[in-house]
Image 1 (tube, rainbow, N blue to C red):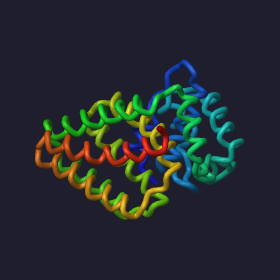
Image 2: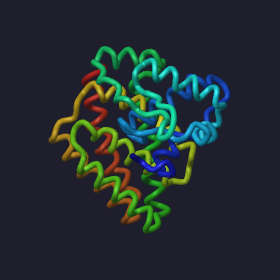
Image 3: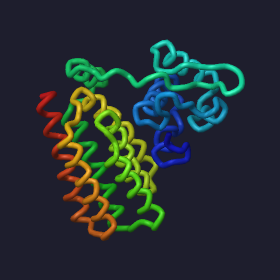
Image 4: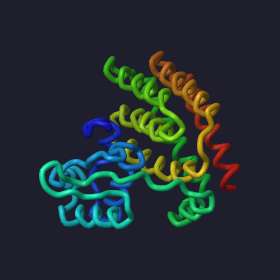
Length: 242
């Protein structure tokens, strides 16, 4: 489980806007499940703490949990050691289901890909320009190592946490929040295409090049390393959905 004060958890459990609070709360809880902030069998933070972090009433939070419970994503236990637990990961969508989901949000694929590339390029360039502390570099190294050790079933989650951490380390909560939302949309498309072993190995090498460029304080190298990493994913999504 990712610690609840981890950068990736902070990006997910951020305050909800007053409009559409229930719908957004459901999305945030699903985001926590999909990204492994709360893994299968794991327990969500206590209701009081979670409603405070999300900035919603406990009534709204309970209703969001009820929605997820009815969908089979969470289960609740009362009494000592009780709480809300993740029951199972959502099933992998078919390409047609993923395509319909993209259309339901009124988002064009190229718009989504351009938005993600703009956000992530800006993040790695800024990190290379400003530099990171020893602890921050250690965090990135851990993220790379966790992804490298993950199998196909867990890789996308670990990859996503790595990218969210890059955005979080810029110090911009808006950038981290926007990237978290964008990655959720992209992951719903990528979930229709299981990663190959060769693709995982290539991604690991690209992660190391990105972190190496940031460590070297080389913005152009960071931009190029990230660009190569994203280009491979973008080609795959275009093959599937255009």
